[in-house]
Amino acid sequence: MVDAYDLTNGQPANASNPLYNSAKPYENRDPRFKATILYNGAAYRERNIETFIPGGKDSRDGNDNWNTTKTGYYLKKFMNDAYPLQNPWGNAGFQPWIYIRYAEVLLNFAEAANEAYGPDVVPAGSTFSARQAINMIRSRASVNMPDLATGMAQTDMRTAIRHERQIELAFEEHRFYDVRRWKIADVTENQPSRGVIITKNSDGTFTFTPKIALDGRKFETKHYWLPIPRAEILASGNQLQQNPNY
Image: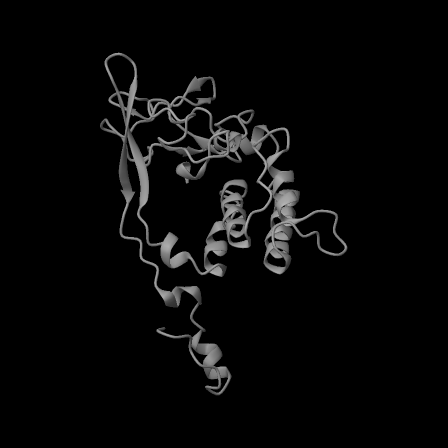
């Protein structure tokens, strides 16, 4: 997920990008990264997150590491720093939960418009194209990422829209269903969950070493569907057929 956030020039965060610094990999990222992820050095509740080893306050070393990060990261999205950690519900009212927001409406439109008309055709009854809808999300003041270029092929726009959904709607309960309806879960869900080991050097710099945080995930073709409850099959007089391989 962290690797999915591009740099501010709109290009991936890797060694071929002139804005990328392997010693400071979290700099120059899409602003949505810092709004979503707590990373080593991120400011949070009057101090900086420390997931480095040895000695970081939030690191995985020490005798009491059962409740610390296994990836090197924590979730920031939805967190309201103004709420106290102790009894937040009693002292600070409530935390609103967003079921749908305008960015999702634009993403839904862009996906449908691209599949029906392509990236740059303005559908009848609309005032913008699929590409322009995505650029409306990317160009808002809190994000300010480069526009998607004109002249993209439909397949390239499809990839860009899927990437934008992953970033914009991160941890908002969409990705699980998106990869299944796109039929790419057999690829995305069969990859191990990765993380990073951050080592603090004697000169105060950090070394970032990729690691596998969680392995053994297994997604099979049958998982694109749920099993039909046996009671429903019996209630139909066995007219309903069970989904394959259940």
